[in-house]
Image 1 (cartoon, rainbow, N blue to C red):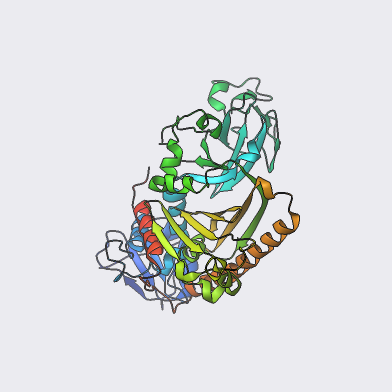
Image 2: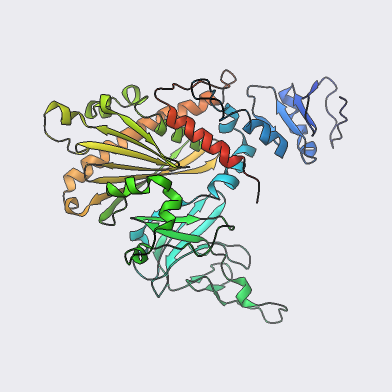
Length: 447
């Protein structure tokens, strides 16, 4: 196979190129890392380049190249024989953007909590991937969500949380109602073929489930699936809950996770130097890492009672606390039993004692994520400041331990010494199912 390269700058004559066989598109392995800077002009033509330096991560991947990386994991191979996904799933920029498109922009995302939009004109903002959004409750009490981008010149309209009667662009003063309609376009005298109705904010599907606010960025899903806990209280079908949680909905509802009686106590955000999946992988390996990473937590749990139940979209881990079997006093924070639910693709719900804790894992880049912790407490315990502070400090210690191990794993994934691993079948079935679900999502066609 002969390949002719045309570039704006000449390549060193000492560079060797190795064509990859059985590929329909030009794909070349560059054996010298010093050549990477010359490849951008060629990349525009659709070629795929792998730089054989300290990492096997491709510099650029075409659609064909991304599919090659995706197919390096085969969900049809049984758990007992399967290899884990390759390290490129955790390091490759093109693969990261594929995840945004086919996973995060097509699934329900729990981005906030109902107390943030409890009253008319309340709002909060956020970012998911490259999407800026705003969620609000309009003057009539209706729940709304929009892309937080002015239709004039793309400036964000709002930031943080608070209360507004309308959204005014800080750049040029274009003004929008809380329902997204354009109310005023400044200095447009002389403009032609302009209809204000065509320039409202771009809507986003929004719903609530228990104390949580969810959005869905998939433009191709039905736009009338807008559920609100205020409507559900009047007997409407919880179709969004079923779509988000699948056949685990009743299980999670029966243990009170969908209750609106919890009150929000604290939010903490933890920036992490690791791929978002590293954190999820760590969460999903159940009691495997706990004795080695969380010595203090281990003392509070009866790990012999640990169990994992897998549903179609949710994995539920359950464990009794150590005091339950030793006859001592109830654990002050954990109660008699702890439950940890992972909701595909990036959300966790923990229920223990009087606490409800959620984690939202936000992808930032191939090697960075932010984990947003929200803590909810049964209303009867809100005034127990000592108990609250002590519980939150214990949770923080556990998170610091997880951060250390996750950031260390990311460094290992970027090492040339690691390519793929194996599953421990007795402990990592939920992890294998997570990777299989990702493969299924990423294999769906572009829309």
